[in-house]
Length: 398
Ligand code: CTP
Image 1 (cartoon, rainbow, N blue to C red):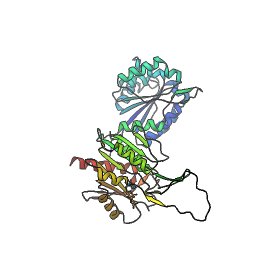
Image 2: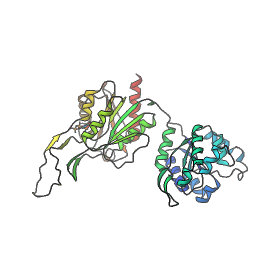
Image 3: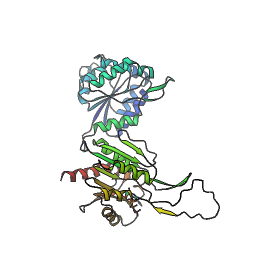
Image 4: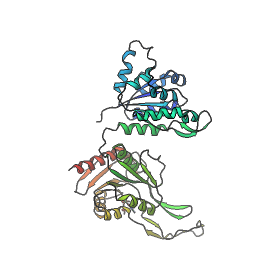
């Protein structure tokens, strides 16, 4: 079990304070201990009780209102933190820290901590673009403080521009990634394919495979968090693009093949979790096909097997495939492992109701080219990704 991590969240006064509640909730769901420090102006926007209820820890506010604790509290939280996040961070807190001002609980804690400090600014766009604020940000970056850049859009004040607090899901992904205990894929390049591909019939119709992309995205995120340089080549999905990975979107088998080949040579590990369409219509109709007879025959042509192409081409790369099977799981997976010249294949039974397509869980067996068969319990797709990289790393060290 990984050691439980502690995040100290500094909340400063701006309209985006309410969004920080979602940050607390998301971090708590990841089993992170969250301690919130609010400035006095943050308390004007949202009652500390809301943060207290979500974090299940006392909210710290003014240095001088808690006589029993104030002397050491900024030191104890500063020491306790594995990471400090300031969200939303106003121009005021950025300016204070950049100029060495420590006059309340939050600013003294930021000054006293040795943990990484990340600011997620949110403010009016003119304020954010003000050279004074920008200079303060540059200065803090030089000291090693990190910034999660705000988004552009319509701000609470009605102006349009840069200054919206970055999406809370992305903020949390960045934080969780920074807290990740192992960085055993540092300096490794990992290419992942995910989602379905489509084979167009006419301008409005296409053939595709069932695939949410969740497994491939979980693999890309795990690799990123372990320090890898990740390229994710994805067919159409409804998932948000993961931060911090090079994202290439494709639609057809041919587009996926071309992008994979373009990126193949300098990769260390390639994982093909995509559900690639095996057949495409022999002819594509430029016009929408009109309905006429009761039956319509489509002639299909076998499309490229991308993974087999990679297996034939590979030299030192580690190649991992998936096998989606409805019967004879292990023997079918073994055949694919050999035929496609893979190092590993992750076999999953697609007939199971609560695992597999579109679910968050999966129950797989991993087969290795050395003949090992490793059955896994039902677990989250992220945990499957973890186990897969644990295995690859173990064998890399042999
Ligand atoms: N794959 C691929 N290109 C294809 C078909 C599959 O790269 N045209 C890859 C998938 O990404 C997966 C592996 O091959 O990693 C196995 O895919 P799967 O659909 O289980 O098997 P197929 O090889 O298509 O064989 P079948 O459909 O007959 O089971």
